[in-house]
Image 1 (spheres, one colour):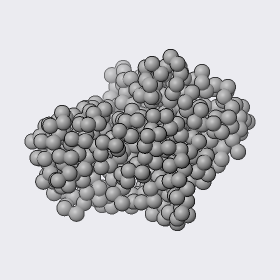
Image 2 (image 1 turned 120 degrees about the vertical axis):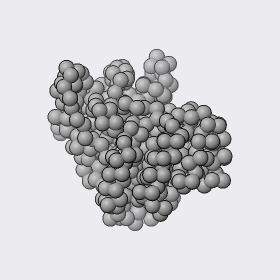
Image 3 (image 1 turned 120 degrees about the horizontal axis):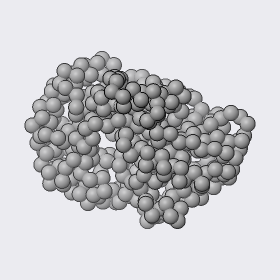
Image 4 (image 1 turned 30 degrees about the horizontal axis):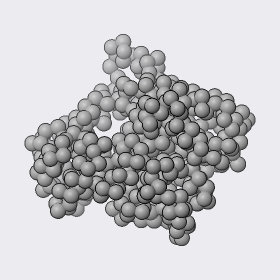
Length: 446
């Protein structure tokens, strides 16, 4: 039972200098510093529990999201937690419909990233007070209550409350068996850790070899900077992993529409399952054109990590512009908005393969995809969740991987809580690590 009035909201700028080792590098982001606007909320409930939430960023710009979180805090402080969860749709709409702040959105950009951080903290606190991991809170929730958490504005031409309720009601059949399956075997993953664009060949080889020894069978390769180098690197990795394992490509929005078709056609010999983010994430019809052109080659289009909101996803689905849908736990408006996208994907029969990695994205999105399998999709066909092996050691409840699968989180909450020492050490710019870096010291980030 939820209780307490929210008495405090604190937000900090936490940055890990991953660019020093080229971790996360791709064709559009050559020097990312994996970072987060990290939110902590407290209540007067007297139980000592706090809600932790974050949104993922790449270094510069995190300070803008922090400002947006502070601007939204007026809608959070002094709110009763029970009132929030009993009218979660209303609370979501209050955050996303501020008459002045929505002008710099609406439901997109820095203000929406900030909304995700705040709502992620609320969901974490709710799950902690219920004594359940987030996925279990969702799985155990009555379909009517789940539907009440979703804002259906702008998507009722595709997904109504009645349709959402029917999908969730149908998902009750076989739910116990699917939950047991997840407990025993976990949710299948793929790895992106082996083939960042900035890694030299020797590092690629070492990482691919180690991953295969650990049981990985699905590998994503960053492409898009140079065609001949992409051909060489894809050949190297395909030879390393062999013909029986799955390869995916990710261009991180690098190309024009025709350029994407021509470029990927030249990489088709390496049998990629999909090309991810081939062009601007806002170009719905461009994605549709690319998807239609590549279908005869057996190559799908995947996108979603930078889709602003449920409306963009609605249009991508309507336009048959993607074969694999990639939700993001921090780009969209937290659990609430992700629920609406999972339900639309179910209606259109498009597999969900979430974006993860970064700072805490693996920890968060595992809950969403596990819920999706147990209560919405009921299928593992053509489905897998991204895993990137960076920075998990900074979280109190890190994702657990066995046999290339996410094992079900057992700790109460949304797995969003950082270790206090890590949050303090990497706080920008006054944290110990950043003070050393800014004064010219060399630091290695694993």
